[in-house]
Length: 270
Image (cartoon, rainbow, N blue to C red; front, side, top):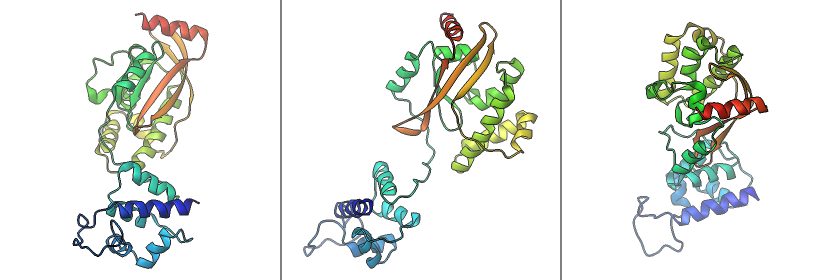
C-alpha cells in the first residue's frame, strides 16, 4: 500500500509539472499533462524502465540519492519533499539551518506558562524567547548580549561558580553529549562551529569534557537548583518541538512539589 501511494504521488506531481518550465519544447501532441515518464527519468538521471516500475509500485530498491533527485526535478515544497521521503521509507535529511522565527502564538504560550519557567531555543541552545519566570530563575538574562543568551555559555561560564545547580557536573555532561550530536546533524551551520570554538577558549573544563567524546540525547528529568533568593527549588522539565519549525524547541519547567511551586510563585511576584 505504501508503494502504491508512492507511485500515485509521483505520478500526480509529474503530471502537475510544466514541461516547458522544465526545459522541454511546447507541443500539441502531448496525450498527458505535465512531464512524460521518460522526460522525468532523463532529468532525474534514472532509467525509464526503473522509473516506470516505481510508479507501478513494483518492489524495487529506492535510494536516498534518487529520491532527492526526483524531489529536485519536481520542485517539491518542503511538505511534499518530507512526504516523498516518508512514502519511500527513508529518513528525511536534516533541514538546512535557518534563523528561527517565533510566531506570536508561540510567544504567547511561553508568556502564559507563568509562573512556570519556559523558553524557546534553537538547536544550539540560543535563547530565542523566554518568560519572566525563567529570567528570574537564571537572573540577568536581559542584561546579557544576545550572543551570551545561550544555555551552554551560561552553564560553563556562570552557573558553576554561582552554584545554581545541585548536580552541575551531570547537567554539564548531558549538555555536551547533546551538543556533539547536534554538531554532527548540522555540520554546515556556522553557529555550531562558532559556539564550540568560543566555549573551548572560555572554559578549561569544557575542553576536558569535550575531549571525552561522549554523546547523549535529551531526556526529561529533574533539576535541583539553589536559587539565591528562593533557596532550594526542584523542577521537572520537558522539551517539545514546534510543529511548524523542527529547529525550534519549547522547554518547560514544572515544580516537582508544593514547596517548589510556592517558591516559583514568589519569584514571579518579584
